[in-house]
Length: 206
Image 1 (cartoon, one colour):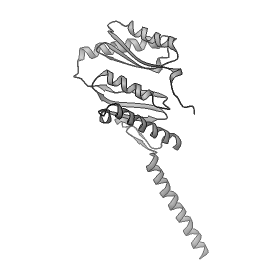
Image 2: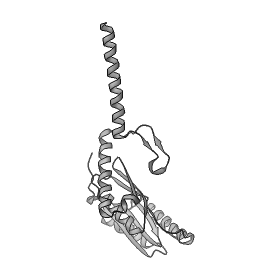
Image 3: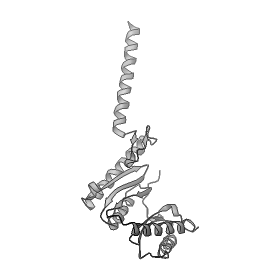
Image 4: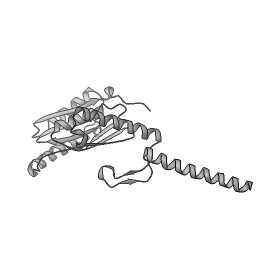
């Protein structure tokens, strides 16, 4: 009889542990499926529970501030935070909206990087798009071959010959170099830079 009781208690513990793990999984979301429609599925989330909670708080913070800035962003913009890195997708009416959203994302406490893949709503124009793509490619190449610039810290968009640069610079000199490189590209009509200095970032130290 004592043996049966012990076995029964062990089974109860196993059931309780299983139910707890299922509950924990539903709370923190240890699986990620189809990030932004990419179809990529991750069976096990490599982030610690603490990191997942921090990322969730950052994402809620960002979503709230975007909605307060403009209610249209609530449906038009989607965001995801992974290990302090912010990923943004969606469609907006003009480049100024994209620039504004990028700034708000960088102002999120604890942010490590921002990837803004928001698209601009407009009818497709092949000739204009080809010209913009060429400007973007030329500038990206120029940044890569400039040893005084960390090109990986910048994201470039060109819209109707207006160049939008997002990212972080090590110092004021690097910021100026990036802007000067953009202005030197043929056919560029205007350069709009949303570049923060490294010293101004509010990055949480792990």
